[in-house]
Amino acid sequence: MAFDLTPLDLFDPSSYPTRRNEEWKYSDLARVLRDVPSRTALTHLQAATGDFGGFYWHCAGDGQLGDLQAAVTKAIQVSGGRLYLDLSDVGEEGAVAGYQGEGRIALGADEHLILLEDYSGALDYAANTTLHFDLAEGASLTRVVILDEPETAVSVRRSTVKTAPGSVFKQYVFATGAKFQRFETHVEHAGHGAHVEMHGAYLLKDTAHFDYTTRVNHAEIDGTTEQLIKGLVKDRATAVFQGRIYVEKGADGTDARMRHQALMLNDGAHVRAKPELEIYADDVQCAHGNTIGALDEAALFFCQSRGMPEDTARALLMQAFVVPVAEQIEDEALREMVLNWIEDKAGGFYAL
Image 1 (cartoon, rainbow, N blue to C red):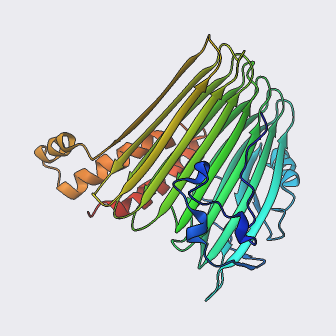
Image 2: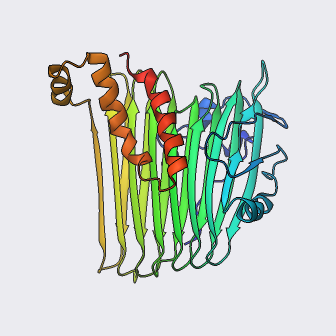
Image 3: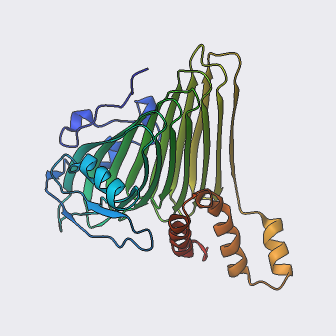
């Protein structure tokens, strides 16, 4: 099955998806992006790498996301396969700056890469980027994505992943939303011992919009997929999760599991969830679940009964809800960096 990415050109309004497109039913780009952005070579911010270290690469606004493969080669040579990819953008005063680009990263047999992608920025901009990942047999890619864009940004970040037997792809996405923010990942699962994980956590407030869309196609035997997505939504923010796992006929031995859990912290918040399994093989183990609710009042009462102030108790429970996603990151330095980021961002949820 070929990757099914909706054609999109920021500078051609006729290509903007609307609600009539089922894949974009809950994220109407045409409604949000009413004015065509101006073509701009965006200025890039240099983000702090924290304790992650690794080889730093910031992408120039040349429409090609720079030579990513050269950055990967350098990272493997000088930092043991740790690459910090800076995709932070700066818009323009009084105008919507537009940028779109495409890049590719290929890992050879038994090569390993830990990739940290930073999408932050300032002012008004619209971005449409696509990354393609190709994993050879035995290769492994751990991808951690921080989507911390300004509230006025419009961004569509898409990726495709081709796995091979025995390869491992792990993705962790952490988002605060924007005026419009969509993160979309399509995976062609090679089976034969290949393993895929696509996790995520979102913390949305005010009028932020975040759409996490994933598509996994199991075409061969003995492939595994795990997904855990958790989120907090308050004020008038909107979260969208669309996850689909497709198991082709003959893909026996597939083990695929998907869970989405969200907390709506007030009546005005919105969560749109659409987890799907489409199975045409017989000998498989597949499951999906979706839970949307409010903060556990019993747990809140328990904390307060032990002398904890209400604000502190709420903070503890909300942070504890999304932390399990970050705790799955195996790299210790990167895990601590993300946990600190969550603690900082969760601060805006304490006062309700």
